[in-house]
Image 1 (tube, rainbow, N blue to C red):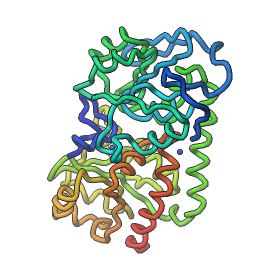
Image 2 (cartoon, rainbow, N blue to C red; image 1 turned 90 degrees about the horizontal axis):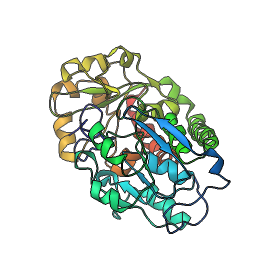
Image 3 (cartoon, rainbow, N blue to C red; image 1 turned 180 degrees about the vertical axis):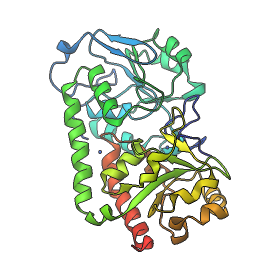
Image 4 (cartoon, one colour; image 1 turned 45 degrees about the horizontal axis):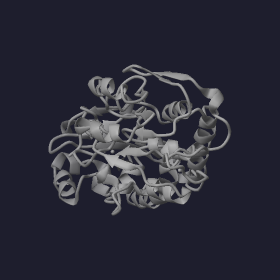
Length: 347
């Protein structure tokens, strides 16, 4: 089942960890034995650099060579900048048969680098595995690490946590933080602009999307109903493809630290003006149980079949975050699903 963020419970709230609850870039050059490579240019002048977070300040003295990433999105941005991490937090729910998120695996193999080691995250964060990787930088700007975990990690290597609250970092802010941490702050604007262009180009192919409004919902079990905020990353992706967020979304009181509002199934009728409902389910059995609830089934979009969801967990994970690797992966898979739901909406 899913929690109020659609991510791992807020021990962490882990981005889309539908495993316990549920949530594009080209890098050139071959990798070093260290597991990272340079994106080009001399980053030496960018150091030392200090990055303040809600949990503490990380001072990075020199260009990192052994990066470890926690949470989601940081590995992708590091790879896009030419720095393949030596270790990443595992994310089995969205991984393919190889055990890796497919866009990460493809990008790393394309670079000719070794795939990062994977380790347990969240409450069971494997500190020993991280220590053995001997990192000189730990990136966790979009994660749910706790103060207690941070205090241990910072003694292993400079650790960059989230600037405000766990799992609430804006996607472009995350790119800026990662770029600064690896000594290439000037590359952040380029990556952000490229992502926006890809989404805008896709939106131009679907001008009719502007005629439809949507809500992005989730459940954490029978009788529950949550709505992601209009600025949450998965909502940002859909908005960027041209659809409009149902204005009612901004009237809900946000559940602290979740980028969403848990409104309860009894308030499902508040979403009656949403032409489309975006959502996800942990499995087919859960989907049938949720959709069988009378109040859920009574929502106009559900009655019409204008639900946008997928049983491809890799896609669900990719479309839950915006970064240089997930955006191109998501766009080509998203448009046909949205088109089908729009046909059923019949507007």
